[in-house]
Length: 463
Ligand code: HEM
Image (cartoon, rainbow, N blue to C red):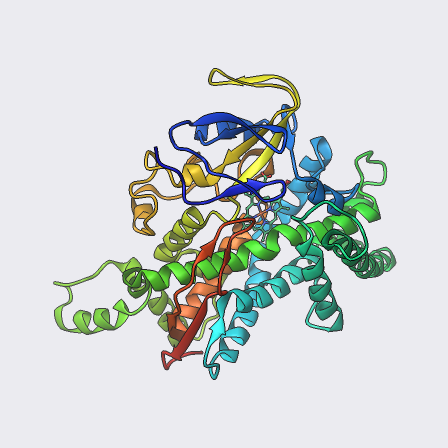
């Protein structure tokens, strides 16, 4: 019997170690009957039947914080509608073109600020700039006192997401809910101003232009669909914007941090992302066409050289075309399992592959067990970006679900991948680094014990 190395726990820090000898098994956590599924086929049915047979289930502290209006508690047609609105916006090429500039700006500023630092903590550094990108995408908030205030309050708010559900002054949950009230006021002010602006706008063409941010997308829905019964209220929009910050805030910087860690621990992969270009240029000039190493190996330096020589700006498709970098991102998401499992509750009895899931039972669809199963991946604990050269990654692959699946497939999927690609490209083409030894903690959320301290040295041709 082998167990996965990653704890997958919930409800008051109880860790469940998922045994590989049972693909689906029943257990109880603090009295809650739970079916743990490590079977990709069962997971797929559970994810795809969300809303009809299964609804998301969350511990009490998360439910308290989300309150009555919540994207995570929203089900049925309203969830579908909001998911489609936000997902469609975040996936649109127009949005990606615009946000690429913002991401580049923040990444370059951050990298420049590292130049004279003796030591820096990757986890903290990435968290700072990804939050700025996120609030820009959601409510067009640029660096300002409001942004600083929002960041401070948000940090307090998020601390209470997984905690003891005790709401007394001084407790973590209480402080978190108070912080949420202050965030609500700030976001309300911004949303109301924007609504006024939209109403005053005499430019009827406005409705046909591309929305600037998520607030714009949701406000247009109000003004465009007055008679729609599913029309969104202002309070819903404000809460929704706050809740959109939650899934994006930790996941993206943690993926970046872990990519840096895995690359530091796997120098060959790092070399292939970058320095082969020097060898390539040298060999190319002497032996071409006898020697020609694979194009993808030198991709980041090559792209940077192309851009420097032509003077052209990067566009989002440039970053997404970095194939080896995409493989590094896939492998990071597979090994790291930032969201290691999702929870669903059965609305009625349902049988999947001969297994009865009784009404009211929770199902824990374990992504990390699927990602770490040697039936699905050879040497699953090894960081091996090359494995993706053979298989490729697609949302249709049941054995690779870092962004979930079905009706609740992460709408931030493409934005996240783009942001990580931009960060990795500029990092590996600007600096070499040495990372201190650090350990990954998997519970209750994925983190680095020491926040991954690194020392950087400039490659010499940084932009
Ligand atoms: C590497 C980064 C990310 C990972 C690994 C990730 C993972 C996930 C997963 C697994 C789910 C499904 C949850 C479920 O089925 O209950 C999800 C949902 C969601 N994610 Fe992400 N996410 C990431 C980044 C983002 C970003 C940047 C945003 C926002 C801009 C975002 C917004 C959302 C939202 C709104 C949902 C809920 C969708 C719904 O229930 O309709 N995520 N994410």
